[in-house]
Amino acid sequence: MSEAVDEDLELSDEDVEEIISIISKDGIYLRSEIVRVSCPICGEEFIGTKRHAGGFLGGHQVYHESIIREYENAIKHGGV
Ligand SMILES: [Zn+2]
Image (spheres, rainbow, N blue to C red):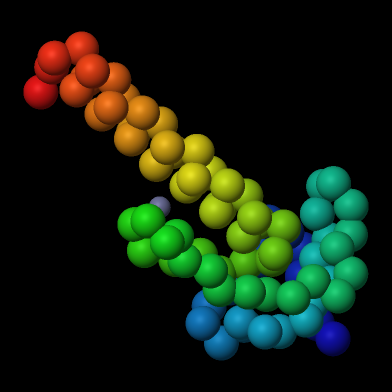
């Protein structure tokens, strides 16, 4: 099992499914699996730990929902 420090963690395609320990400012992530996820709305991809993948997906969801809401509001108010 390899170890990495959060700040110099460099991930690539080849690291997907690797199990590593990551030492970060918040604590040590033991047996973190590196996963690859993509946003179902825009297709952007992310490689990283599940924790960060969750942040990526959640962040995209919030972003895309806000864009959709803005668009719907514009229609409702007779804009566009
Ligand atoms: Zn997205």
